[in-house]
Every structure is written in structure tokens, then in C-alpha cells.
Image (cartoon, rainbow, N blue to C red; front, side, top):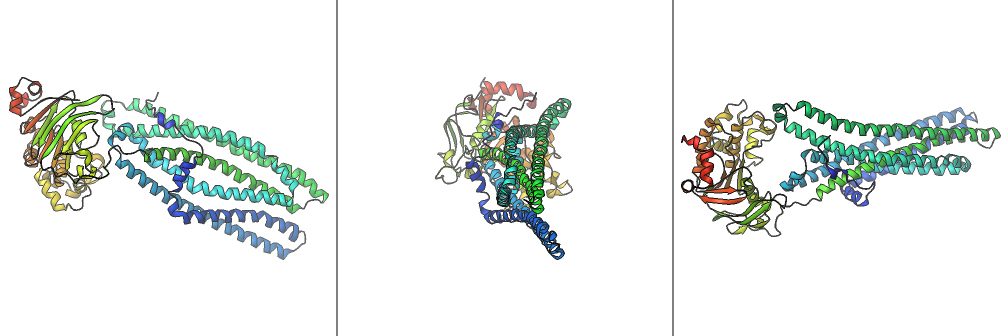
Length: 594
């Protein structure tokens, strides 16, 4: 049984929601000229389709009956011209509507991606990446189908259906009434199909999101899967999810396989009634053969828009469900917001202070409790503690990835929340233990789109952190390709590149979050003098297990279960028989050879 139960995926709205449609049309409004042209072309195509059977009627009743060969030729040429015109206008209509859909969905994707970038990390904690991928790709594509082959073509279908009804009633209301007797049966059939396919499509969307989430997680964790021989079990889980999606799609195929032949059967039944009743009228002289053939052709066309409208209804329902999910993301307000009147950008002239800070990721279980300390300008503070003590949480709050629940964090006496988020983060250089490298090249990964950083600047900082030598060993040097997540680089190389990235932006506050924990001894020798240069006269926060880094700190803060247990220098804390000394003896003594 799958462990992926995203209940919010089950919440789907009505088949048609005017509020959602109004928001969707806002993305079409800039291209109203394409929409208007598409609607006009739909009416033209429908009108031409109505004209074709009437030309056949006139040819039979007038020219064939009157043995007018020249008239037959003229009507045949006229028929071919209308047919060519219908094809041409239909081609232009399809092209324009697909162009409209692509433009509108491009804008929607841009809005969706831009909005997702503004959301806080708490949002991503609660939403799997695979689900978000489904929103930005699959759900948006469903909306493209709505505009490319849905709303506008339905208008043409309705126009065609209305025209057929009017012409049939005008020509012979008795035959028209005979055809209309099939409508109740057709209505019942369409209702049953609509209700069943609606539920099936709901299940398809749910299972597709689950499959994407599971696939993304497995691809990201492939190394662990292979290391622990989880391939067969994960394959079995994927097969279960994949089979669930296949079964729902098969249910949809079955409904279509029943519905469309049923509509065709009703259409054939209507034609049989016409042949029976109209044939007798022709024999009595009450109806011309041309009129009977006209009705037969109109009956075939009468059921086409009905069948088409039923199919478009399902596109509409699926689009409403997709748009509801998309707008749910767009309506999610960022929890980390800028103040109405932001304070001037922080200069970090005096220092940083935590005062009675409390914080819980879930709003209940506090991971930081009454934390208070001060970091003077230009000083290095190390934070140590056991796993889960709250070290990284302090960094998350300082970078405003999350907002604290109680207390205050100030820079030069001004609360963090008073600064614009962009101004605050431009103050900080962050180096994490798990270094993330983007697809591209080394140069792009160091300057991260900041074109003011020239290649000479990047080379200079790379030399400082001792990354230049290994970079020059690659065939492309600074233009060497970086694959997804830097898969071809060692852990030490990735961390050296992260140091170069941080130094390139010359931050006033440098944060190292376990940044040297996975570096081997040889690599550590390379970066120790780089660290010394990085930290010199720069306000820094270091979370590390490496004794050489911690010993240089001006102050060490010892966290225990979310609270500050001890504060002092390395020597002071060792002199005290406290938690730091016990941690030191357990973790660091072998490094000193004691």
C-alpha cells in the first residue's frame, strides 16, 4: 500500500466555477484579439459546414432534377470552394487558439514560478517537490487544453447546433421533431457519462501527483536506494502507484469506448427514422429527395457538436480542478514578508543580538527556548551542541527563512523584521554542509548571476580559498560543466566552491553551517588559511565540529535541547566541568592526540 496520502489532492471544486474562470480569463485578456479572432473563425467554420448540405440539396432538387449539367458543375465547384474555405479557416482557427493557449499558459507558469520563489521554507516543508512539479507542468498543460480546444470551440459547436435546429425546423418541422425525439435518450447518456468521467478524472489527477512525488523522491535519493539495496522494494511501490494511475486511465478509456459508440448508435437510429418516415413522404410526393438527403446529413452533423460538447465538458471540469490547485498556490501568502516601510539596509556596525527568542517549526514543539546572546561586530561566534540542539534553527531565523515566535533578533538595534528581506540576506554569506551546485559551469555557480563579478574577481576569490588549483585541472577550467547538483565533484571540491561563492559576494556576516564537517584532512589543510582570511575582521557564526575552527572563535555558545547551556571562550569552557568539556572529551580529544 502506498504511503503517499495527499488528502488535499482530493479536494476538487465544481465542474464550473465562475470565480476561477474569471481569474483564468485574466491571463487571456492581454491577447483578446486572438480570442476574438478565434471566436469569429469558429462561427465562420460552423456557417460553412451548415452550407455544404444545403448545396447538395439544391444540386439534387434543382439541377439534377432539371438535367442542368452546367448547374451541376457550378454547384460542384462551389461545394469544393466552400470545403477549401472551411479547411483553411479551421486551420487558422486551430493555430490561433493554440497560440493563445501557449501565451496565456506561459504567463501563468511565470507567475506561478515567481510566486513559489517568494514562499517561505515552511511551505516547502509541507509540499513535496513532485506535487509542485505537477502544478507547474501537468496542471498548467490542462489549462492550455481548455483555451486551445475548449471554450472557443464550444461556442462554435453551439452555433452549429443552433443553426442545424433552425434550418431543420424551417425546412420540415415534422422531420425535425422526429429527430428531436432522440434528444432525451442522448441527454441521459451524456449525464451518466459526465458524472462517471468526472470522478475518474479526479482520481487520475490524484494518482498522477502521487506518482510524480514518489518519482522525484526516488531520483533524488538514488544513491541511498542503491546503497541499501532498496531497488526491488521501491520498484514494487512504484509499480503499485503506476498501476493505480493506469487503472484510472483505463476506466476513462472504457467510458469513452461506451459513450461515443452509444452516441453514434443513437445517431444511426435517428437516421433510420428519417429514412423510414422521409422515404414514405418522398414516395407520396410530399418531400423531395434533396430535402431528405439534407436532413440525413444534418442529423449526422447534429450529433457531432453534442458529442464534442460532452467531451469539452470534461476538459472544463479537469481545468477547473487544475486551476483550483494552481490558484491555491498563488493564493498562499508568503509568511516572510517585507514591512510596509522597511528600515534602511543593515550595515552591521555594532552587532547582532538575540533576546529571549522562542521558536517552533510546527507552532507547538519549541526547538529554541529563551535564547539570548550577542555577537559584536567583527567577532567570530561558534555554536556547538548535540544533534537537534537547535544550532541550524538559529541560522534559519537569522536569515529569515523562518520567523521566530517570541522575543527579538536585532542588528544594530533594529529588529530583523523591520528590514526588507532582500536587504537582510544581501548582508549574509551562507555556506552549508550540503552544498548545492546548479547545472551550468563553475563560473556561473560562483557568481550566481551577478554579472558585476568579472571572471578575474572569481579567480581571485578562488585563489583565496585554494579552489583555483583544482579548477584549473578541469578541461574547461572556470567554464567546466557542472552537472545537476554537482554530481561529478567531490564533497570537498563542492565545499571549496561554496567558500569561493560566499567570498565573491564579500558579505558582512559570514555563516558556516557545518561547512567543514565532510572535508578530509588534506582538504582541511587547504582551507584553514582561507578560513582565517574569511573570518578576519568579519562578523561570523560558525557551526562546526572541527576543533581548529571552534578554538579560534571569540566566543562559543553551547546549546542543549534548544536552550543556551554555556557561553565562553574555548579555554574558559574547558576549565569548567560542563557540557562543552564533556562534548570536547567525547568528540575532539582524539584530534588533539590527548
